[in-house]
Image 1 (cartoon, rainbow, N blue to C red):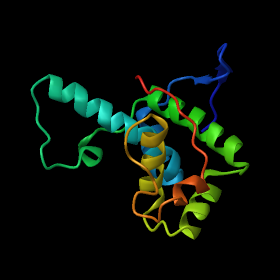
Image 2 (cartoon, rainbow, N blue to C red; image 1 turned 180 degrees about the vertical axis):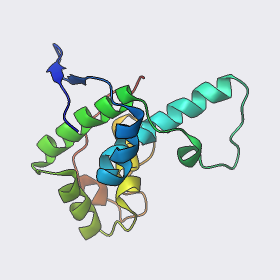
Image 3 (cartoon, rainbow, N blue to C red; image 1 turned 120 degrees about the horizontal axis):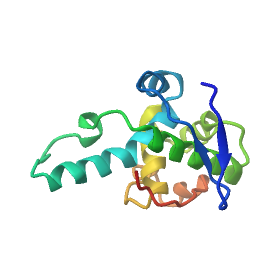
Image 4 (cartoon, rainbow, N blue to C red; image 1 turned 60 degrees about the vertical axis):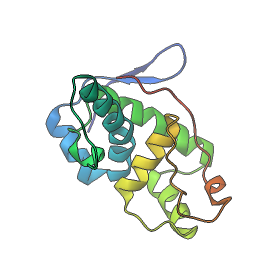
Length: 147
C-alpha cells in the first residue's frame, strides 16, 4: 500500500487517508497492524456508541466495531514503528515469534489488538495469560489514542 507521509514536530508520521478497501485488505495482509489499529478504535467506538444510549453488555466489542478509520491505521503505523525500534526487530511478525516463545497462543490479529490497547494505556496486556514477568519480553511504547 504505497502512501505519502510526513513527520510532524514530534516525529510522528501522518499519512494520507486509506480507502475502506485498503483497510479491509490490511486485515488479511498485515493482521498484527490491523489489530493494533482496531483494538483501541473498537473501545473508542463503543464509548461513542454508549454515549448515544447503545449497550454492549455481554457482546464482543472488537467484533462489533466497524473497521478502523484511516487515522487509527496511521496511529497504528506509528506504534508499529516504535515497537520495532524499541525491540530491535525488523517486523511485527518477529515480535509475534517472541511472544509465542513465551507461551502466547492466540492469533496475530489478537496479538496486535493487545499491543494496540496496551500502548494506548488500556488495562489489556498481550501477556495476561502468561507467567508473571513474561510481559517484559516485549518493550511497549505509550501514546494516547484519539481519533
